[in-house]
Figure (cartoon, rainbow, N blue to C red):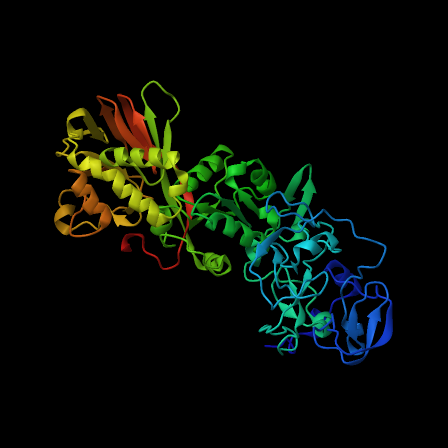
Length: 557
């Protein structure tokens, strides 16, 4: 599709726009020469016959490409000051390239020496520039800016891509792009050099524009960045656990700094001071994109609570269970999908409150644990503790969801012959009412409709069960559900989802009191530990806002 029908006053780059968009004009000292085998650096096509060659940098172009040639002259003695390129993705400075090695290919040409990238190709994660490793030190142009608060509009940032078999369409003329064309590092639109000055002067930032903070809305302050408030924006801030999901956490980080401003993307293992400093001017008016397992989600929400922030929460699931993502309609695991396709769905999503719960013990004023999914005592907690101990001893053996689940099954095998009569040494009250426990070895107190990776531990209530005052589970109704497991085989059948086995319904209520008569394994949201005898109380801690997939019914899973 071309843009021929757009109003003319909305199109056309001014000389200032050209300068602010990473383009350079009238820097070269061209002399005529006769070429028989050179490729035109401007369009990527063969130069055959009279052509132009720069006496400073030796670039060769067609005569007809002179007026639409925008690359900086590498021989000009007025270098631009910008930070030295890095191979790191974190803590990027303004204008700093971040390179990573990608697959070798004959299709691409180096943006520095303009020779084919045959043996190696290094790509900037932010602006998508392709170069040889040896050419990185010779780069003359900065990366897409992180902060440029002096700008009065969102400008494009163009990077020339030279590639055979392009497959891109010029957004201006609607024709297939030439081998050498430009792509905006913000909106990702492709345009030929001959059409570039007809492009709309303001960059629309792509499909995720509401969630992206362009350089115009970011300023450098002290040793980091600060987002400038604009009412139309609801920025996404990424909290990524790089150790979750095998390599997927790191991969999402690379893609996110290319789609968004790098100042919007953080590794939670490096702390929270910088992301909170960056987004402070937006208060709670942002979307926290949490990339990790359920444990990471809880960790980030705890840190948000400490600084009184209540943003919308969106989860990209990288853990083993991922029940928070399942319960909000986003699926049970991330397998490398394009986040540029996933994230626009947030536009149409709804926002619902989700309950969070606190565990308090006698003699301590502050809660000892906060949980979102579940709190369990006995059988499944003991299995989780064995799994946790094994994983800490050999982390290299736990690199995928499938492997983790297999190891979990192996840890549960010894429990089949155990004789853990949990019902004899814990005593439970729900909303002040004594509960007579059935003969169980494990007790789970659940907040979400699924447990352990999508298993329905509280399926829809039947009419007969309603007569006994049971009702369907809702994660925002201020109540918890109590279920039990008679033994390891029963638990295994419930977790595997095979057969008709379901946990034993015990009770529902707002405040749970538990007296524990001897030391016992407990766990909260996948974090197991040994609990000494005590009296504990579980009650509502707070409500948080979760992004729920459009048309997704919580009780439909």
